[in-house]
Image (cartoon, rainbow, N blue to C red):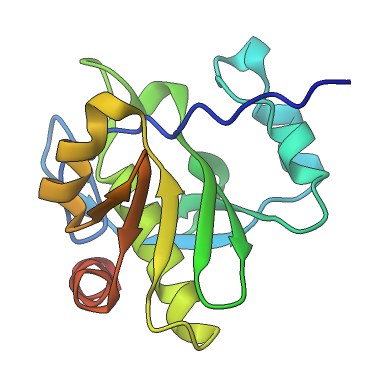
Length: 173
């Protein structure tokens, strides 16, 4: 059995908002981040337009999968992130905006930034000083440096350190 190579994350930071923002009206909405549940898995399938196999990710024992929702509207998932707490940082395995939050017709901006900020917050909560790491698609390395304050460690490895993490957390939380 061959293990599929991790090709790197390819989410785009559309806008760093204070929460998530309706693209048409500009209205901001406060968000909640909570663990994805088994019942949520029925709504985040490839059939419904999601790119990743979240059911498979959910079953990975070392990972926690979180969903982003709007406060008082917990049934509509705006985005999902898979995180693993390592010995001295948090690793982002996958991140995806809901199908209706992608492309030119997206409903809300700020979803990816919100999820990355949560990864930084979790890192602080676990005593890892906000350090977050992930693999990037090669063509997005510069994008993550500019938008997230991440630095390119080598290869496709990206790291968000304390100062950049604090800025993201301050923006979203």
